[in-house]
Figure 1 (spheres, rainbow, N blue to C red):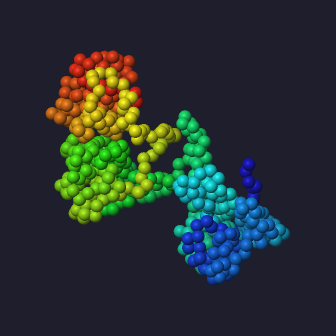
Figure 2: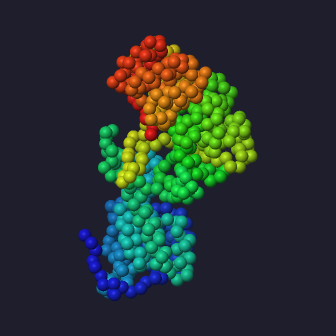
Figure 3: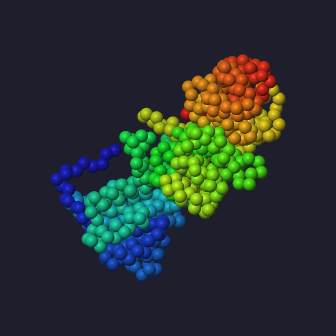
Length: 534
């Protein structure tokens, strides 16, 4: 239902509004005393509640309790204290209108010109691992009501929801009042604040009630701009990076050195994480244009596991690795840094870097180093924009007990390999998930030796993988992210000397594919699960 209609001629101009009365009720007490001191010095009446009132009084400031304004005591364990006409009439009265001013006088209610409110720490409570009623009690009711009322009435009221706004507000109070432009900007921040808060609450309820087959009926994604980038994928495209509240990924990484990140750097760094962190052992992935040039885990008994993994990944395709983006799933060591001294690299992303490695990298001033947040984690859901909407799906993840899962793979040709060879097949199966479809990965000793990616048919991907592997193809294992529709693709691999193939199976011509493997006396497994990556 629409609000009342008013004759514009009745409105009086209110640009600068002096602050005579302030309502202060904050959960985050950061810099509250500095604000209180400035308000008191300016002769502003401070009306406050609970802990905010106590802190201000202890600092020697005169504070009016909300209960004395409402004539009603705080009740229900503090659930009801500001939800009262004596408060909200003072927030919502539009004093540009003589009639509103008259009604306030008749009701003996004084208006507020400044409202300082931030909400209960709901998100922080959820992150702490709290459950049930402990979380519910952190759902603020009175706070959002005051914030929204004040923001709606920005023509008369300045609403402050973050301590970061205190300095500008203090300056305005000292200068004689807040301006209309300032109040409108504060209102925009306030509505964004409550919108994000409501989204967090709604998400918590949705995630708590969803079944494994349900997806949320309503999806709200809130992100804040972290930085404007020089350009997007190409120089004529504008671009920026945004951080999502609660995110723990590449957008939250700390840049330790190097040029500013580009759009493509972020895309490739995220793809590199996807590849390296699928592995349990120390692993490195080298990415170019969102596709792997090489993925490898450490060699057995390596003195420096992460440096070993990098060298083995680099050997897969040294030409394409030029100008690549590297991700390591462990600390980047001095040895790895020394191995990279003469290799042009755009970005290295890792959980941490040895101090000695950082000293080596200082000589490569343009090299970007990204350190992941301590709580880095892979996303549980994937979101992709499409024209007019977006797609949401469960993230494609491997189970932690994939070794146990592998025992249930269907052996359709040849003999079950020894444990060491099964480890190689599991590595290849994981690695192919990081390759753009159609994906074919050739691997030997848990390192890629040939990769075929992004082709519109699987035969060409097989040819590309074998061509890049060269002599290394013989004796390697092959993984395909989806089934082979015909036997021609596997035949290319078999002719190159592949020792085993792992694929999902499920083609109407599976019998032909299996027959080709049997004729070559090559082991073949069906996993029953594909890993497209578009």
